[in-house]
Length: 264
Image (cartoon, rainbow, N blue to C red; front, side, top):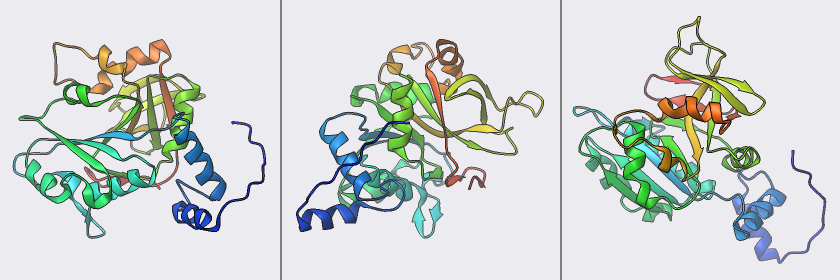
C-alpha cells in the first residue's frame, strides 16, 4: 500500500464546494481523495481517460448493451460510471443494429464526453476489434464489454496495474459456477494461470474474468496479424508466462446481462 502523509491546506470556499460535488462515496470517497485524483491527473501520472467498449450483438436482436436496466440502457449506466471515474474519451465498437446505439448516444455531448464509433460489418474476435481501434488508442486504456454492469474503482485498479508493470490487468470477481467464464489462478496480484470456461474439475479457483481490463498500447503490437476472429483470452497464457498479466480482485457490483448472473 502506498504510504500517505497528512497535510493541512487552505482552499477557497467556492473550490471546496466544487470538490464536494465530485465526492460520490465510491470512486471519490472524500475531499482528500478528490484532491489526490486531481493532482495525479495534473501531473499526468497514473491517470486513465480512454475506454474501448465492445458492443456487439446478433442480427435479429437489440444489442445487449441496450438492455434496459432501471429504465436506462446498460451501456448508459456504464458510460455515466466511466465519466465519474474521469474517463471521457470513449470508443464504441459496434456491428449488428448499431444504429440503435449511435442514435441514442450520438457524440456524447449530453454526457460531456467524447464518443467515437468503429462500425464492423461482421462480428470479430476481441483481437480483431482491438486491431480496428489501434489508430485511435494513444495511451493506457480500459477495455470492457458493453453487457456488464460494475463499480470497479478504476484508479485503484490502475495502481495495481502500474505497480506490477503489467501489460494487461484483469478485473476479477467470484462465481460459484465458473463454467461460463475465464478462470484464473492468482499468486499475490499476478495471474499465473488462465483457463477459458473450464470444467469443475479443471477450474483452478472461483475467480473469474469480470470483462474489464486495463491495457498498455504495446499489447496492440503483439496481436496476431493473420486471424481477426480469435479472442483476446487466447493470448493470456503467453502474458502469464511472461509475468505481464495482473489481477485486480473486487467485491462490488458485477452483473453480466448476457446470462443474468451477477456478483455482489
